[in-house]
Image (cartoon, rainbow, N blue to C red):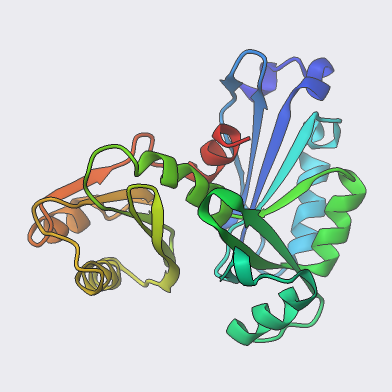
Length: 259
């Protein structure tokens, strides 16, 4: 349990923080023992800003104020886009990002370079939140949630000869990542109000990419509250449907694995 962890050794640990409108998640990993402690989920207050919620979390969770070997900040939202690495220029990051997303005041545009997949992930973060976290952890690394997930799934997708689709489900949205033997075919985010939306988007993408009904695979992860309804509907059209184990906190596992 996190409560019994010896934080006098925190400078040996990795702290991962996921920021989402659905709430925050905090995880501590000891790379020496390969031990990952249980993820602490922290509810946010909808009427408060992201930064105000973060300040509350740092007041309530004492060990967030300790020093760590490495600190990862994961942004779990739909404000990300991609550009091929060959066409990427640092000074054009903001221009490209706002070509795909509405402009927001008080936002900083960051990026992650995924060399193994030859793409750059551009993403936005609230500027006040960015500066607050920099004050707490000057050496912290910022990531779009999509970045470590793509690197992690690209490795998993190389197993076997089938093409693979991975759906990362959230309460009101879903990210879909498709691969062919480690090569990224598609990565996108979709708004989903319920099971019907999820089934529609997954089957539409499956058809558009020409995936085979009996041979290719669909893997689900994330929030699976509607699993009993979702799986039967998908099995009607796709034979190979699986739930990743464990299904939750894939992004946090991925960033530790790919570190």
